[in-house]
Length: 286
Image (cartoon, rainbow, N blue to C red; front, side, top):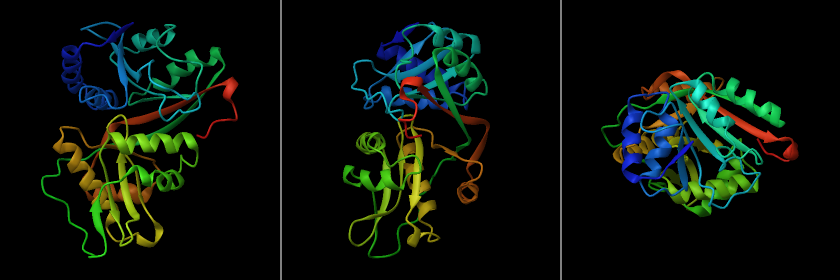
């Protein structure tokens, strides 16, 4: 196991990961953020360098942590050889198995291998699988808000409570703290009404993925969701990031919207694993 701290090598890794798209996209997004100020305090672990076969991004051990906060305690994985990934999992100092955490990736063996290592440790593994998407370059400025009483802007930390209570995965203190940090660290976009309250929005997560796109019910079917997707995609692309996202198979409205903006549905799927040690069973908001 090797922790890659050298800035030159991290930039080399960023370029190397490009040749393994789309499977490397989650790790690539995390590495891009590390190379641009590292606002989420991540680090990179590899089996070897430079001819690595597996790479994991994780929270720095020095960073403050909450053992129930699986939103923040998140690992991204890419491997060329699944045996190398398994080898990293088996090492004693790569994963913190004593807290609730996530593993994210775009490779099919992720769940099976992770579960094989987790089960003997009495760690439960819950898998959610999504369609993975990539938006094409947004070359023109998306349409503006037409109503004079509304404005296109970005989110502030004061909006975190609203996002926490409208997110299907939210409604708890860990999620609210996580959303606050996302808003503070990464690009976001929203439309505000005449009172300054957000009515439609989207944010970016720690892996440079667009997420939590939402429009309040009374403002739906007005084109805001498309505006959010395109505006945030353009903002990410202008900074050199890919505009990547995930969507559940049964979210027909979002799938149709993504097709309308010519998003590419990737051949690989996005897998999110939430791992819960027996000591925290029943205490976790999934």
